Image (cartoon, rainbow, N blue to C red; front, top):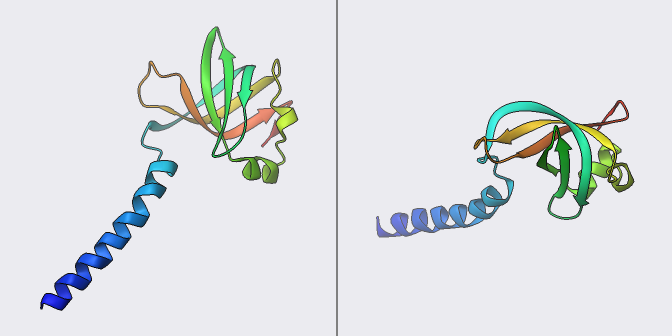
Length: 116
């Protein structure tokens, strides 16, 4: 019985240890679960790992848009050059739960009529 308890405890510890970092990084807990469409002009860009960040001015409010990892963007055909300052962009994605937090996790990016 003692061996069973020790085994179950160790397995539980290993599973928890490996699942927490993945949850912390890949969490969507800050999003509302509902999607919005945001149309605006790119003001600044910070691309790289783990996610790129694009700041978009939409109707006078600057939104923080989290885009995919560089390899995902590339696989979708979205290059760094396409996310240039001054370019109009349409973002569809999950917005932050808190209305005052102007942040969106992009699921779709549309530039010049092309969906990425």
